Image (cartoon, rainbow, N blue to C red; front, side, top):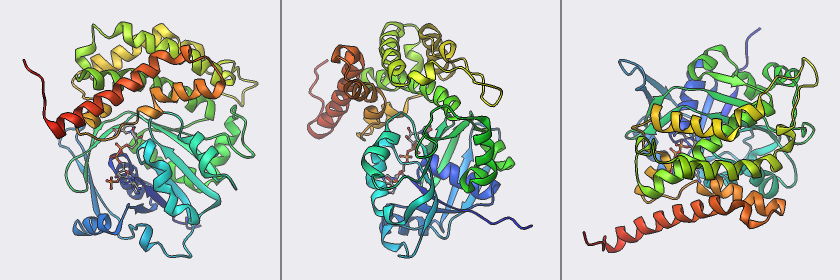
Length: 374
Ligand SMILES: NC(=O)c1ccc[n+]([C@@H]2O[C@H](COP(=O)([O-])OP(=O)(O)OC[C@H]3O[C@@H](n4cnc5c(N)ncnc54)[C@H](OP(=O)(O)O)[C@@H]3O)[C@@H](O)[C@H]2O)c1
């Protein structure tokens, strides 16, 4: 029997979007269609013959993957009868709703959408503000690979880690505790998950197809890393390694406060015990223990990746908006939503305010000059 080639649209053709698009096309034989923001951006891509290059700079010899996307499109050029059956969203978190708007008419109740973004809160935006009349199949990816833009449509795959994926709890699968049978069923029958589970694609990005509760545990762990490293390196303007021996107290305050709120918001995860062998074992309290998290963040963030400049620091240095609202700001929004007193998020709220201040200051200096006297 011949396999049908899935068509997968990618909204957010930046570092992560291009990495996924190129690997899916090459390793899962998917027909991948990048959705660019405008005709002008598409014309730029045309100048590169619709080729995206991924340089694996974490490997010796920097092998280059070249993928061609002749069907790349943009809102003005989408045929009116087009249907989007599979969609990967890799815009920055705060860009999601606006980027999706022109494509909403092509999305239907059976569309599979996977969000591959940092932070938390986009799922809630989709549920509360975007999909009010129907709900497509939603999935979440937590990507720990590192990638950054080089020139043109060339991107550097700088750090190899893994990509965790899971179905989000919505519609008829709204239980946050999922069985391994559900994961297997999706791997066999869901077109998007089938592509993500193609063995060569799995190997190329170390894909782990999980239950929601397993993915959520990984997502919260990564969220806490981002909630410490990203804002603090941005506020004090330093590379990760410089914080190694001095960031303990501020990281501890961020972690303790965030965990207290997350424990309330994700109570079923913190209370989770597997019902039977169809449910995975999970060490939630051990993984999300505050002392372990502090040690983990210092080790992974400041020692292993000591010469790294965080993506948020890069954003504030380059005067770009940041994802702070979906990281520390998410704790603040959760507190409001849960009706908790504002004292329960004062550290994360202050951190969010200071990141915005840092960005505002950098923009002011860019416009009016640096008024400091030595
Ligand atoms: N890069 C990493 O190493 C890494 C690692 C882990 C997680 N993540 C997360 O992955 C997500 C994506 O990050 P990234 O580094 O790939 O960001 P990025 O390079 O900035 O890519 C975002 C892309 O979205 C596009 N976009 C924005 N608004 C759009 C619109 N209205 N219509 C169409 N396209 C639009 C941008 O297009 P333009 O180029 O036209 O602006 C850009 O190409 C973020 O949540 C990030 O935190 C990144």
